[in-house]
Length: 288
Image 1 (cartoon, one colour):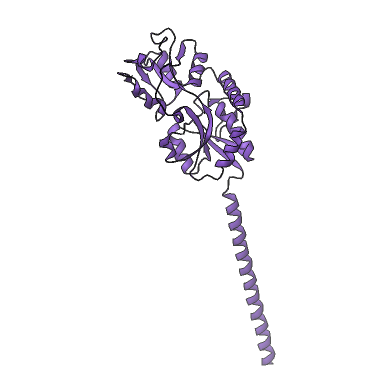
Image 2 (tube, rainbow, N blue to C red):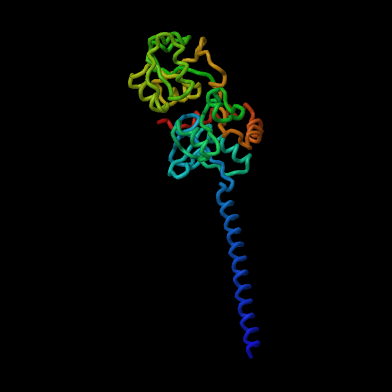
């Protein structure tokens, strides 16, 4: 009787141990499965997140609808349009990813890229040597030159050289090569840098400045948006590195997609690029 009872107890204990081991195995398996799910969830799922100001026409601007191929801005009811947006769409398509536009201040673009908040900067940014110290750049996707935006009918309208602006009140955008080259004008009254070109247009019309340095597309845009504006294309212009008037895609150091994006850009002809810019100039909101 005691032996029978002992066998029963052994059977019960064995069952308990096996059940516990099975539960443990299942728990470990569940943990492994959860870890795999978390890893997958940390990826962007094929998104290509682009940072831009959406306030730098004709390269990029903000509008209220999706007209002319504009893309909705992330976490925002507005849309981004412009040359940069159309270029970003081509790159995202070539990468097989969903384009996401992230609107932010100019000074926040590089930090956002470095902290993985965005995947690239497509924002009319020049690949200067200073910027190359912190981020990488693709081949250029647009090349321009510097002009001076002025009021039509002013004494500067017939200027041929940058030195014709000696004594003038001149500004440009904060933390850009546009602003740095102003120092090449002798006796210039260099004004405080401004955040964006719309603010400069307001200051110019109000007579607070005599002109501002910009790339040619902005000069064309300003003159098209306001018949009181004109721009000077210099015969004797600024001494500047070609990289200061070129535009490229900014990427994190060591970005794996660099070669692929360069390949995509190489497939966009110069004629197509000029057509895209002409369309952007025509389509930009007049208020920009």
